[in-house]
Length: 224
Ligand SMILES: NC(=O)c1ccc[n+]([C@@H]2O[C@H](COP(=O)([O-])OP(=O)(O)OC[C@H]3O[C@@H](n4cnc5c(N)ncnc54)[C@H](OP(=O)(O)O)[C@@H]3O)[C@@H](O)[C@H]2O)c1
Image 1 (cartoon, rainbow, N blue to C red):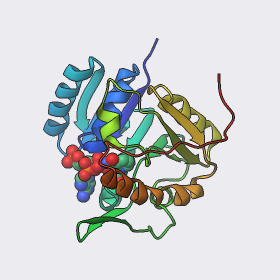
Image 2 (image 1 turned 90 degrees about the vertical axis):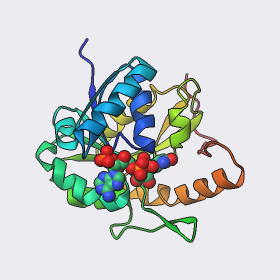
Image 3 (image 1 turned 30 degrees about the vertical axis):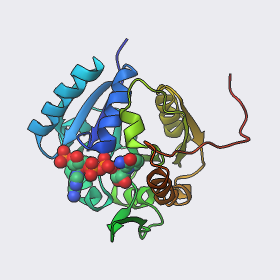
């Protein structure tokens, strides 16, 4: 069977490494994208040794070119520049998953800074070529928990997007991570309801000194 290839742009970072580890462990072929190829290759080697999965390193553009699904895991301030870099790979129909949240550290405190378009995901939609299917997911999932490979992550993951097929594919993908349940939260515009919660989760994580506070929705239909 041909493996799905997933590019994680910013896969060298805190959240990116967690995504790479979990997706490779789920049997996907994962390509780490970085602004520096050597950095991506080095981290790919490390994560291959940790997971035994198929992980490669490349520049952001090379990673995005070969992937069916591109995950964007960079700080909000870097989004515009990175999208410019990978633009030749952003063909019609491509799925672009944004995990981006616009957070800022001010006086030692993490605050949420609402993007002009309403949310980071909607901002990204404005910046990509028409026909790219932007899906918002993973913002409320702790990077530390993602990197704790032996442990199920035990949380719900809100997923927002305007393309039903793309959203379904992303939910199927994330549910291959042990303990993750994808929750269809409607159109991409609803990401503006999800992203600000992250500042609260960061505050709770700090206050309760735990590896990461996530979300669990009560009252949704049980699944087999
Ligand atoms: N950390 C979490 O728990 C968490 C959870 C959910 C969502 N998020 C969101 O996920 C995104 C990534 O978070 P993170 O904690 O992984 O961030 P990070 O470690 O600070 O950065 C991720 C990667 O992005 C690239 N990068 C950094 N600054 C950049 C810039 N100015 N322009 C372009 N690329 C840049 C770097 O890769 P190269 O140097 O290799 O290019 C870096 O390794 C953020 O939007 C964050 O809000 C984070």
